[in-house]
Image (cartoon, rainbow, N blue to C red):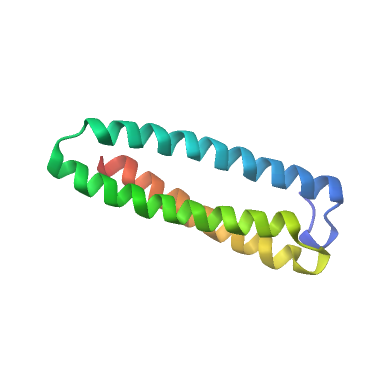
Amino acid sequence: MSNLTTMTTQEKEAYKEKVRAKIDKLNAQIDQMSAEAREKAADANVNYQKALKDLQAQRDALMSKWHDLQQSGEAAWEELQAGLEKSWNELSNTFEQVKKQF
């Protein structure tokens, strides 16, 4: 992809669609994990539910940034994109940790 300051409208739209697809996939995985949590033993389930709530909170923060990016003007694009990328990386790391733990 080209330099952020020279991204075309088409490149920005493609980026937004790519992020939206990642969010949709993550939502499906969180739903799957939620279903699995209902099947786990009570003590493990408490920890699993807490981890899922943390994951969902991070996802909600990411969604907020994604919505901000959707509405952003040219001046705010780079800052919002960088914040979204940072949030995505943090969420991805948390998700992988939760998957490994349970």
